[in-house]
Image 1 (cartoon, rainbow, N blue to C red):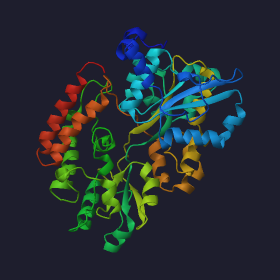
Image 2 (cartoon, helix red, strand yellow; image 1 turned 120 degrees about the horizontal axis):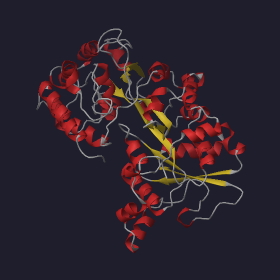
Image 3 (spheres, one colour; image 1 turned 90 degrees about the vertical axis):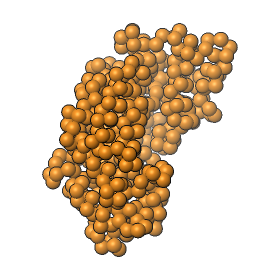
Image 4 (tube, rainbow, N blue to C red; image 1 turned 60 degrees about the vertical axis):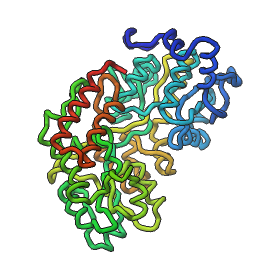
Amino acid sequence: MSEVKQSRLFSRRQFLAAVGSTAAGAALLAACAPAGPSSAPATSAGGQAAPSAEKATVRAHMVQKQDVSDWIQMGLDQDIDGFVSSNPDIEIALETIPGWTAEYIPKILSFAAAGSLGDAVWFPPRHRSHAAWGVSYGIVTDLNPLAESAGYDMNANFFAGANAANSYEGKQYWMSFISEPIVPVIAYNKTKVNEMGIGEPSDDWTFDELAAWAQSGTTDDTFGYYAADRAYLGFSGAPFLRQFGVEQVDEEGKRATFLDTQEQFVKALQFDYDLTNTWKVSPSPAAGAVNAPELFGGQKVLAVDIWPFRIQIYPATFTDFEIDFVLTPVVNKGDARRSMLNEHVFGLTTSSANPDAAFKFLTWIAGKEMNVQGVIQGQKGPIARADFWSDDRVYEQEPTYAKLRPIMESIEADFLVANFRGEEYDNALHAVYEAMILGEKTPEQAANEIQDACQAVLDKEPA
């Protein structure tokens, strides 16, 4: 049982009530078993063959995803950092679940309800939602005692921002696996920019300079710039708001604070409003959802804000023109660059049969070599480890990562939505923001409505 307060846990009886304890419930539990064969040697779950007595089997639950399950299996197959050969007494069984969180979370909860949960679990947190899911439900345990027993220093291995994001009420429940700054760079069509003679963007630009450049590059059939991956303002746009000095919630995660810096918030909203409605340098969603990769690949927009994973994907995908990358702008020359952390994380379950072996597994998948190789081999994004960011092999493979290093070294944790309704919070914010982009609201109106909409979500009971 987890150390969290009993009042916050769901009991086995509540779990069984949720999934059904009759024959129908049993059928549902069976349906929730990982689909298809496990991507590692079989485990004792779901009627599979039991492991040999000589080995401790670590059952690791995760989504079936190229940069998660597929890469971990590749790491096992390649014996990266000698994990397999150095641990002959450990068998790793990857129990993958197709789909995303809508499919993954109910299945993990049903395993917990049935008492068949494995040793390690994956999660992609938003606004500290992994605390609600893993801790409140009693799914994961504090890693600190295991780390102390193994002589593993969390603070020495991970940046402070990552450890802060993965901790709750003084305990660290999760370990970084993929950790990156949220939408920190702009990709631009270097070939077309130079053909047009408008000059290339610079790492030290302000938003005003970006806007002027985008206007000079906008033609009848080409947009100059589109916010793209940062245009979902609550999560992917959070560093943009921080750059303007706007923090969305207070430290307790219970009060929306947009209007504490109302002038700066309206300025940030005004910039995005003007991109589409005043300067018309960005495509409008009025005609339907904007497909930014399609526009960029079709050379219909010169520059787009991107997640770090596109640094590897875009040049490999769009080969008809040269692509380069530049840091997202600041408000005033010389401003400190603001950030926010995006992660995929792993934790150890409260019911783990082999916690020491499972902790070894976590430190391996979150280790330097697994993550350097993940980038070198083009399989995954970076991690919030100093030794990863000081390895020259990373920059030989992806020179643009050198721009991200200072951001990661001072990375800021995601903000907390205390009732863990992070996705609902983001959707409420974005609905008002999108209405503004469509020209249905002024930035001033949107600022007040976003404050009210987000506060209404924060006032709800915990998820």
